[in-house]
Image 1 (cartoon, rainbow, N blue to C red):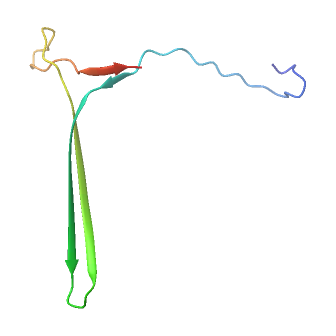
Image 2 (cartoon, rainbow, N blue to C red; image 1 turned 180 degrees about the horizontal axis):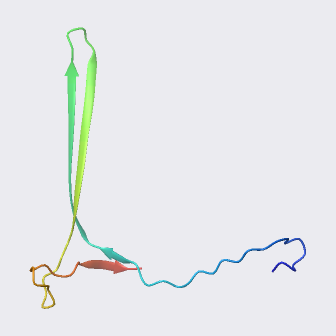
Image 3 (tube, rainbow, N blue to C red; image 1 turned 60 degrees about the vertical axis):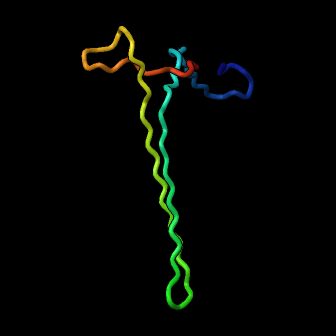
Length: 78
């Protein structure tokens, strides 16, 4: 590659093919709370709170380990 006219010094990076990426199914729970307050002078203050909780979904199958949890549920593979 460095012998191509105008290329100059060349560095080559080789990327190896990796295994598939597994997308796990998640059980998602979210809450949102908004509070509006007005003071005696007519000022208004608004505050918001948002929370999100995710848990991986596991399947129970014959290959479950001794603790009773199964393998994670894979929704797709890329």
